[in-house]
Amino acid sequence: MRLKLVPRETGIDFFRFARLSFGASVLAMVLSVVIFFVNGLNFGIDFRGGTTIRTESTQPVDIRAYREALAPLGLGDVKISEVFDPTFGPDQNVAMVRIEAQEGDESVSAETVRRVEEALKAVDPSITFPSVESVGPKVSGELVISAIEAVLMAIAAVLFYIWLRFEWQFALGAVAALVHDVTLTIGLFALFQIPFDLAIIAALLTIVGYSLNDTVVVFDRMRENLRKYKKKPLKEVLNLSLNETLSRTVMTSVTTLLALKALLVLGGDVIRGFVFAMTWGVVVGTYSSVFVATNILLYLGVKRDWSKPDANAGNQYANIDA
Image (cartoon, rainbow, N blue to C red; front, side, top):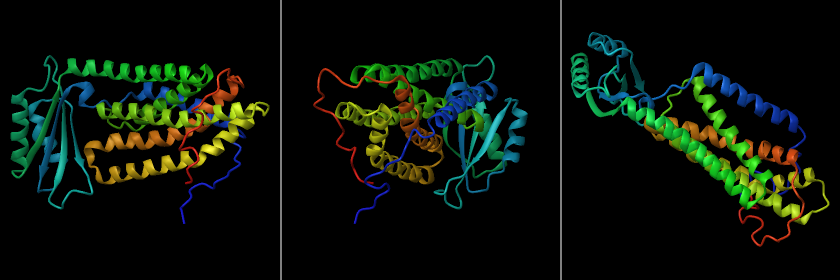
């Protein structure tokens, strides 16, 4: 007996509250942009320049004692945070010491790092330093520009591909969904001031790919049904297509979230930001494929017949039971 997350046949009217869902999406995007400009992003060392020192000790982390030991060094704003992870043993106490690049210096010097390590050892002789990572401000500035270019180029490539593969209405719908996903993800990071580093850029690009895959599967079934039901109203054809692919959509999202949950719990603090962004991206990506991309398509309309039949219509995974 197979587990089914969604019945084989459904008759959900996805456009019953189309204006409400689309309006909520637009409002969420506007709020995300406002939060971004008001709060800004909590850029990590990758984008700001500086040094991150990871400490490990058999003694409990005393952030106040660490901060007092580093205060005489005159390093400016030093951020110290304890790292919690269920995989750590009882004698494994980890902290991250983040030091921004000093004015006029390309990066925190090796001498400064040595002084920091000596100061912390004076507080806790059992402390060790498993890793030290440094990024200069010039490199970090280039990384910001490269990251923005990477996301924009990915979205532009999607627009071009969908335009060729389908029609321009489909392309605009898909790009609108991708912009929706990326904007809401950035807004969430700005709202909660979650550290934003290169791993999050990788997550954004992965979200673009995931959302695009989901949207293309739905669009492919829509195009197939538009050929099949030439006289049915467009709204009914789109609804039918969404219901036919709902099983596949839900199953893909749920199984992806299960894998991400395992990574979130067991993956450790190093990839936690990436996994959090991916988890949020899967949720909003699934939503946008159903409620944003298709709303755009319904609003713009689409031609009901193509001069050339498509031998590859449909998708082999569209009717998988969940």
